[in-house]
Image 1 (cartoon, rainbow, N blue to C red):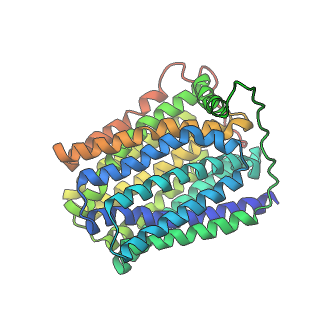
Image 2: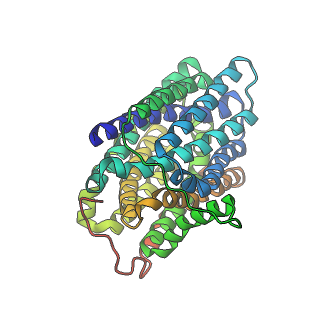
Image 3: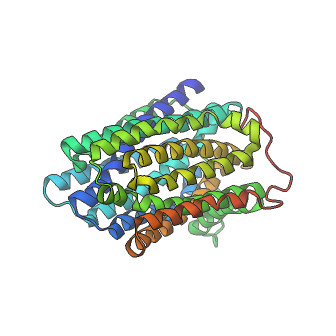
Length: 411
């Protein structure tokens, strides 16, 4: 039954990831081409999404741990479904604006946080600790496959029917995800509620439970090491990501369909999810994390070669990034779980996301400002350099204080 439940979760998430990639591809096109947004506006749109994720993540873990996680995921999907459908409807009526894109980004980002926190918390109970590493690898791999297919399909869909209508595909995939969640027969006990004294309000209880996730991150040196490395890497990555649509559509003048095909082909780097175990056996966990950070930083720097070979620069850069991303994520996710008690899974996952994703709106705004003041290419160089500096956290003496996690099947 656990295999069936995991397969249902896996398949539903794959379809949902595919639709999300179409929207991720389409939203910047809507902003840049359809609504004529500036580089700073595009960066602000992304910054708003990231800021929402960081803020909501602060409480998301405690909320997810207080309710059945499958129910949290289903409600989150319904909210995203309705929000995404509002965009093509507004476009059809000639009422779509930048403001609506911002509002939709806020709502979808908040719902996505709730879904992802509950999703990460429920996986260990579905696959079992002995197969957690394999389960994480499969989920990361399928996410990369969905990204590859979604990027390619997104370019074609945007080219044929337009970016706003392309987001209908994302809305439909949420329906599929909801259906697969209803088919899961996992017995999930309702979390026990903490008894509250008269002077201890619900808000205080929620705040106390939320802080337990942050406290767990601070107590464990190994967790601190990973969260600081990830946050620094994300900061640099956000700078590059914020200006990337401007580089592609304004500087390189690539059509959406061709760009989507190049991105899709380059996503063969997703195999990084399945080489994480052999790489860890070869160079260790910190070596794997450091190598993934370095490869990703080099991939970002490859975008600077667009003046010589636009398609080659995007393809090679994307190839390196999509290889490094799953390699890093599988390693750090499996690594973190070993230091987290099961009742705190949701809260620690949320605290980790709140800290790391808090750097994304800062990086996005910085990217927009840098692109406006010193140019897109200089912004990419600065962001890539910051990402590379994330490796320094992995070399901090005593960062794990002898608690380096041994390689094991349990993850």
